Length: 397
Image (tube, rainbow, N blue to C red; front, side, top):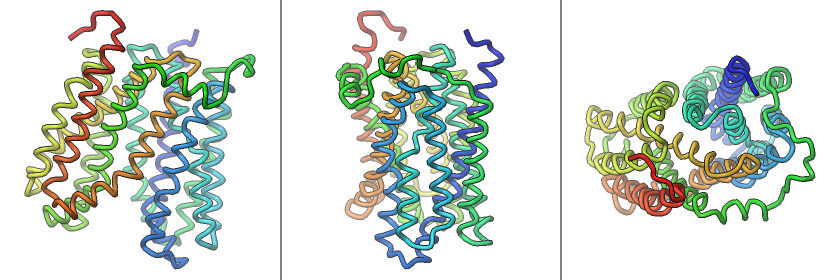
């Protein structure tokens, strides 16, 4: 049995591991187009480059998650962070566009650290406190992503390779933290007894509650990733906002998300079960996204985005927590990996959806289209997931 002191120490270590990883990620992503342009990349090639990492993640997240089920969380996390470290070194030393593509592919194919971190938390927490701990990891994720671009812009003054080497240094520190500070929450005495194949994943998702929650996650993520990826274009076309003001609004949304995940999630889920949070907040998000289309100035926009961001953070953490409660622990990593691969899939297709809506229908219809995706998510969750999750038991209202 893990003591409370050891549990808190482990969660704090995971917080800093995720924070450092996302800080490094945030350092690199905004600079990649400029880095690629140095080697003569066209706008189309830059767009393709941005798809390489999430494409790798679609396949890698379930496999690395399942590896953590079979061989232990610590080994899987070392592999994932080690891949990130090598990819960043390759990016820093890159002297051609081909090497930049390879570095992003290597990072994508080994990057399952969020999946493994979530699995760690599920191993170290009971069901009552899990959402709070998952929220803290979400806060570390968001905080690193907010601060990363600012550090990256500062370091790029000495060359675009400098942020890559700095991010590699952060990954190396993470390797040390994992090796010396993080216990293995799931040591496996006989890995041969744990299947490691696609058939096992297929069995997991033949479960009706997991299958319905996965589609709930898909339509929810599709809506919010479309909102995120098209926000800058919406702000330019609908509100005529300059880049500086758009960046301010995005930073504000990021701060609200971090505060919600870090401080509000635990308080809310202590009073209300996760399925209650999702069931009642998705309709609120649908209404807010419908109103989002009609915002015509910054004060109204912020008035809508504040409750929308809070709802988004609470819904996202609650869905993740529910996914951990829908499968046995020996299938946890692989299941979370598939759920995270859904996020990667939606991040590939959502920019195209948002751009097409704005170009062919107009920016005022963007919120309505996004709200429709969330409405599908609500229908699946309410009429497919909740009845199977209840499994004959009376749930609180």
